[in-house]
Structures are given as C-alpha cells and as structure tokens.
Length: 101
Image (tube, rainbow, N blue to C red; front, side, top):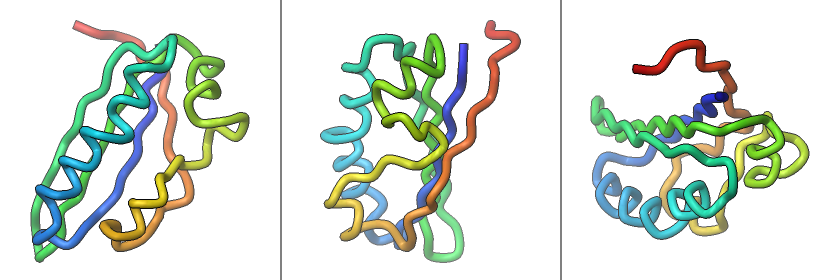
C-alpha cells in the first residue's frame, strides 16, 4: 500500500470553507478512484493560517496515476483552489506503508 501526502495552507478565516470545498471536490475524487483505500484529513490552525494535511491510501502507484495523472509526484489542484490556498505546492510525497494496525 502507498500513502500519498499533500499539504496546503489557507488563511485561518477560510479554514471551514476550504474544508467544505474539499468535501465536495478532492475527497470524493479520491474515493471514486479504483484502488483508493481511504483518506485522512488533518488540520492545524496556527499563526493565522490553517494547514491541511491529506494522507490518502492507495493499492499501487498505478492507482495513484489514475487519480493524479502520469506524473504522480505533481500535486493535483482544482480551479477553485486559487480562492483558498496561500500557495500551490507543486509536489506531493509518497511513502510505502509498511505496517497498518
């Protein structure tokens, strides 16, 4: 199993609106892609910013490519992200999951 990790930050005032946007866009996109095993959404608000960390779980890199495109290291964004994110980080991280309890 592969964990795909994405980070994004919004102004703290937009934190709830961005979470609702994720619930309508990226999260269903993950779940609807064959080979997705789920996603965890983490949020930390500090110094006026809301940091979101999405950890999605996948059967394989091929399953990730079905969601993200052939260049799996590149972050996938939606046009509406521009209204929320302070910057668009260009890359995501992938880790092999060695143990799950």
